[in-house]
Length: 416
Ligand SMILES: Nc1ncnc2c1ncn2[C@@H]1O[C@H](COP(=O)(O)OP(=O)(O)OP(=O)(O)O)[C@@H](O)[C@H]1O
Ligand SMILES: [Mg+2]
Image (cartoon, rainbow, N blue to C red; front, top):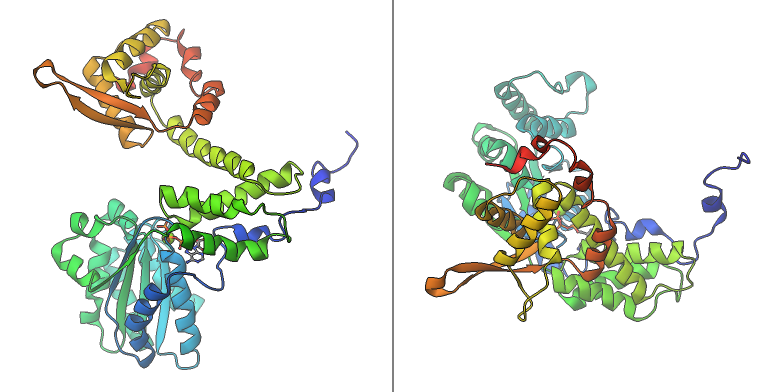
């Protein structure tokens, strides 16, 4: 060892492509939110009366991931607070229910954003829910304001806790004399309200509904161009790169986060390679990396038997119509399980595992009926060739082969 910093080459190396990496991060809040004028105007029209201390309707915002819901709501909240400065008629409170996910912690977090005096803070734990409900009602009423409380990812809280918290927050107005509360709920699960909430809470929470549709190709191009012009040095992007990133994301989901991730990772790869320009080939690498990371995470969570079923699907030659059928998968499965000295699951159980892989999005399986001759599933793998090759070389699939000499009880998770 020379005593040099192990980061020396990073310190010495200057970025030649990316001027400001932070601008490409999804946490960056851009100055303008393109193609969301109508949603911004709708929210402004609904929450605007709070500037005159009038209670706005509750809003439910629904849209797929990466469609700008969080960014837009926080942008409107920030502008609302700017407008209200000096008047103190309203207060914007944001809670992400994926991170802050119990009724107590949600109420604690809301109270913490209201109470500034450290001596009056509600304790982090230890109170009953009734006590914290009562206390927060008092705190809110004392302020004599309109509170706009955003519950982002509300479905995540519901999954863990049911709808008590929504019940409290949508009925708290009946207990208030001076202040008013209105709720903005955000979800990317369009079925959430219908399937999860009781009719009463559903109608209260969804007094106004605002839909965020996926971005189109042209809209994604605008969003990426807007960031690229400040994030990169001049002339380092090959002209087709933005369109390519946008096209991939538009085709999949119209997700701006994904498009930005793709551009950022492509740029990182080019920078690390010391290439002089960012090209579509870097985008391909980035795409592969994102896909591999996502599937690797999912595959890591699979049981050994599920991994073998996936292996059997991948290893099976496709039929003329491009699909693999369950019968062939089962034959391959039994061969692999035998080689590994693993207990053989029944065909029915393997079919269940195939359905689980289908639900995880790793494969597509559709039932094909042959009338009286029975049914099979036609299976198509959703992984690109590159990812399959990488998985083949990866040790995820080899983990269980090391265990094959171990007692078979190691593999009991999948047996019924
Ligand atoms: N119209 C837009 N203009 C510029 N950037 C945008 C726009 N819409 C989204 N983005 C950017 O895309 C990323 C994802 O947006 P956001 O987090 O608001 O999505 P979301 O709809 O809340 O997704 P999720 O449901 O996964 O929470 C953010 O970095 C955001 O800044
Ligand atoms: Mg969000």
